[in-house]
Image 1: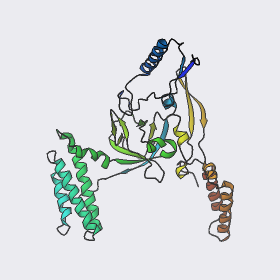
Image 2: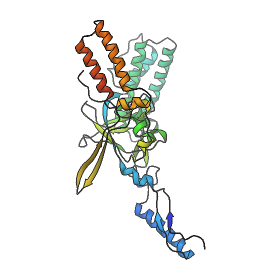
Image 3: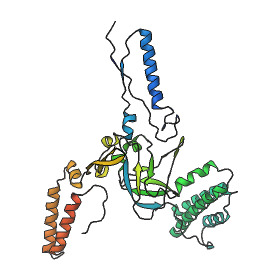
Image 4: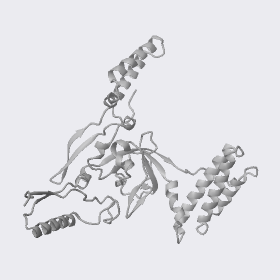
Length: 361
């Protein structure tokens, strides 16, 4: 009875092992693709045999599992801000300074593995007192700066002695995040990895440079948008989530990172937040063991992105030329300088929406 079942769509749901732990953690999967296929086939076969009907052709729609390996995002490092960067700490505090400064100095000099947690509590209390005095006008600015420097110096000292502690208090686990570097990277989270922001999706991220060197710096990755949410501050770990990514010390040389298992959907979901457009794209294939760069697609230009928000590049250039000509007539710049300005503007409009190397003016 009924229509013959020739095809059966079993839907999606096949997981992706983002963190490599092969567990039931939310960013992993504790089964293999073969196990998944075996279970689907077995249960469909059992039901069909019991009903005495012909086995159907099975179709699956496991979009994430198919597409996750589709793309990798590569982005460069632009600079680093060291939070709690150690400043020079004085050997003593002047008697005229407020009491919280003396308390912080005493705590700084007394940090050891046995009192690390107590020192952390004492430093927090002293810093709070200093901030309250500052907000009510009783603490000068230079003393506030010293209070903050002493607090971060204490935190750095506690983190250093933590390796000698038999038991590491849970309260101190946040020190790595508190003292982490802010690494600014040449990408837009909202354009290239929107799920990282929107649904807190964990993607594997790691440096692709200096892999033979031991990384030592705990870091959070920040994009170049103006949005404070434009950062990656959760990273994969074995059955857990890390608040920092361990990177190498940034020395100003090219330092690239990769975000893996991005899939095919991030580029479609991405938006023009801060007018950062589509990135440069390379289609890569592997043929007979050789890596082949099949197609190189240039990312969107400033000219193209401005057109989306109803700014015409030709009109912008014409307006600039008018202003430049007026400046030449007034003797503010000469003709050669005017030419440099216009050429630089035209090149910028035709350039990448992300930061590029400096051009000759």
